[in-house]
Amino acid sequence: MDVGLTVAGRTDAGVHATGQVAHLDVPVAVWDSLAASLVRRLAGVLPPDVRVFAADRVVPAFDARFGAFYRRYEYRVTDAVGGAEPLRRTDTLAWPRSLDAAAMDAAASGLLGEHDFVAYCRRREGASTIRTLQAFSVLRNGDLVTFTVQADAFCHQMVRSLVGALLAVGDGRRDADWPASLLARRERVDEVVVAPAHGLTLVEVGYPADEALAARATVTRRRRSASP
Image (cartoon, rainbow, N blue to C red):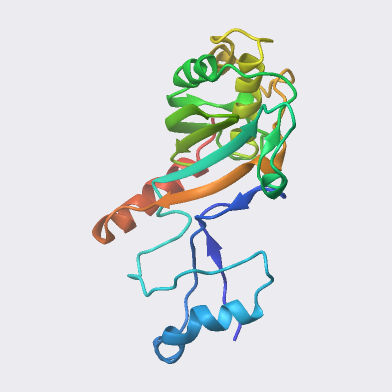
């Protein structure tokens, strides 16, 4: 039986996801026959770097992509002299210069709110680059610096570009107000380096209560179809 899979977020190649959400439509009889054993069955057929940890029945209005009201990402960077720990080398960027986490956190706060993030996005024909950045913080724990960013949605390469801009602040190449100043631009900014994909992980997707799902999907579809 062919079924269509809808995911909450489509990430760039090399980006990880520990909090991805997906939905598919199947006949009730099929679900009832497989529900109890589905997660175990999937573990037997999926590649070792993909795992489904839970599966549940949802209301008909649920849409993994358009029903979400936030997506949260984390980007891991270490400025340890010796580089990333070997067991974390695939999800942590090794940065060759010391980073000022406080300066990056201050710069991140200037990007909050609804803006046209075209300076930080790879534009796609007909797609809006207006997004609402709900939270953005930078926290140091020893040699590890974690960027946590949350928005209603992200455009192509937006998170990695935001991190790239903040890294320039963190190692002293740019002032703390530089990332926010780029919001006045009306085209992609070449000065912003896109951070490597492997340090980024989609960690959580949030949804409203069941009774608000249909309304949320309508708002999201309308917003995504608008031109900037």
